[in-house]
Amino acid sequence: MKLEVVVLAAGQGTRMRSSLPKVLHPLANRPLLSHVLDSARTLMPVRIHVVIGHGSELVREALDAKDLVWVMQEEQLGTGHAVLQAMPGIDADSTVLVLYGDVPLLRASTLEGLIDNCPALLTANLDDPDGYGRVLRDSGDQLQGVVEHKDASDEQRAVREINTGVLAYPAALLAEYLPRVGNANAQGEYYLPDILSMAVNEGHCVAALRANEASEVMGINDRVQLAEAETVYRQRAAEALMLAGVSLADPARIDVRGSLNCGRDVFIDVNCVFEGEVTLGEGVRIGPSCLVRNSTIAAGTEVHALSHIDESDVGDNCSVGPYARLRPGTTLAKGARIGNFVEIKKALIGEGSKVNHLSYVGDAELGDGVNVGAGTITCNYDGVNKHKTRLGDGVFVGSNSTLVAPLEVGAGGFVAAGSTVTRDVPESALGVSRAKQRNIDGWQTPKQRADDEKNQAQGD
Ligand code: UD1
Ligand code: CA
Image (cartoon, rainbow, N blue to C red):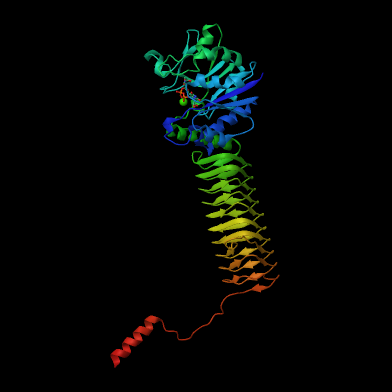
């Protein structure tokens, strides 16, 4: 069986009240439409046709890919008209699955069930079916058709089973019925669901399958529904993590915007956000309110509260934070410790090395067992170029040092606290660069001086 998918995404999405096309609004940090395309891709169709109209340039730019056929619908004359635009590119002997660009939470298993029962319509029972097309069945429970809310009688509006819009149809039947769909209805539109009653009336049997969860078929029309979809997405992600052996302090307070792969016995505290591709090794602990993006954190490492880890590679048994920031290109070897208010950028921190307090380390390579004292800054940027700092194994940098790159401190080297180091420090040497201390005996403070002057004046 050949499968072709048609995704309808030409509508304006007026109720979003946005200049961004509706299907580009983000759910879990990705456009709504990209979720739909991903579900479609799991079915391995021969082609995916995306019908675009409003904001077509933006939509195409955002999501262009080799497996997509872009179909322009100049005027949005209805869902039936939209599918008709894609028909010239569809093989006559294929099965067509119609999806909506604004229905992003469908599960692949639901779609597979629909295709297996083709021709078939996906329906759902809703507590509040207002606005949706209602599913009409005969006394034998067979599908008769769909009536749009605006065209429905009071009796029909009482039906709680709704049309999700998703259907699987043989291309041959679409080719037969779509051109015959009219627009004599309340909205003056060519309704796709009209092909259901047409087929039924001519003796075809169309299956109507109910989705298991109403949340799966949720359509996004406004930002309230978008937030609801985000909640559903979050719940699904949290559930999958817990079933895979992750402990969550509160499953309602984690956001996974991408893919999060975890080893066993990972613990994640509240209000953490994971973006892009993140991998956490066995036993990793993430403290409250951390953001981790496109990073790998190896087994046994603990990330403390309020840390920010971006495009970094953290080794095993490290300690990061609280309040640490690892910027892109950071690599921490095994057992490294990055403490509070420390920023690391494009740097390799060797095994067991420590940068524990209030430091900036950028464009640097630290060997093993290095200790960087509080308030140390690598001056890596001269306004034009970035320069490298290299600290050999076992180097000790005293607090409040300024390391002006390019700079190298040889293994076992020592930088005295408060130094501004502009020249390399050889192996095992002490680099000290600061004004010599002078002590002035009997130093009078300005206050003491003023008091003395006053006393003298009075004595005169
Ligand atoms: C549609 C269905 C309704 C169903 C509901 C489920 C019709 C006539 N009605 O109503 O039975 O209960 O979805 O959410 O099909 N689109 C185009 N071109 C057009 C018109 C629409 O591409 O000319 C796209 C939209 O961008 C959207 C989808 O089709 O992705 C649905 O259109 P929308 O106007 O939202 O239909 P509803 O009124 O919600
Ligand atoms: Ca809709």
